[in-house]
Image (cartoon, rainbow, N blue to C red; front, side):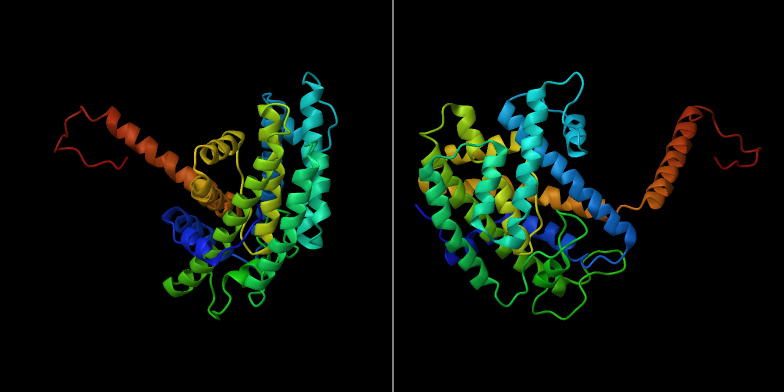
Length: 343
């Protein structure tokens, strides 16, 4: 089989309520770009680092079947090649996952299919020749389709603050055809008209990535499934597609997203339980809510202000203290002869 970016399928997926909801969250995030506030740029860089830690941890958990912890993934991301008291198999899997992640990021700029296969090897996944050939045949068609769809939109990934950020060109692509400013002073979407442009465009581009993701997963499933030695190998064989589609999204001004190991397995289970003509709906049904939550998290991370958070926490503590004090003395009847005391 091959991967076809069918316009009817893209339009149908883009209209799904879950995809529209995700696009609304993504539009709020994209509207922040280009970032000009140093605090937000620093926050975005931290988000990018954290995203790599989370995704490489997910990969290592799938590949090893072991309980890879967040500290494990953080230590290896920071350069550790061994962790006292932890199995070396976990460390090796995390090292391989980080190599694959770093390699795959190059696809965003190079558009070289070999980058995908380099990442597959770095991850330690063994694709049979039939899978390699089928994926290699599909990639040029995907690139041509994406280039044709967005030739005039300015889509493409620029050098953002972090590897996982939505770049300045991503923001430009999201508001193509609309000269209005997309973000207000608080970083939100400025008005309903501009918001509609952002949401519509993002929903379509997100739907395209879902169609491509579904097609590539189907290729790997059908060509590598029989060759996989066990169920674990078959599950791991599709992992590179998750990283690849993230980089493809970045090319088309769609923010990257994250799947946990449980969410990844849920995706494969949903696809396995669908009919041949229903895997696209299954893929969209699982990924769209995950994208909505992740893009909301990304937005919150970028706009997080430690001073404002401290002020709000103080106000919340004071409110709770007042409520607790009022509850403590609620049983005491008011004495009309005494002056009121503010708690």
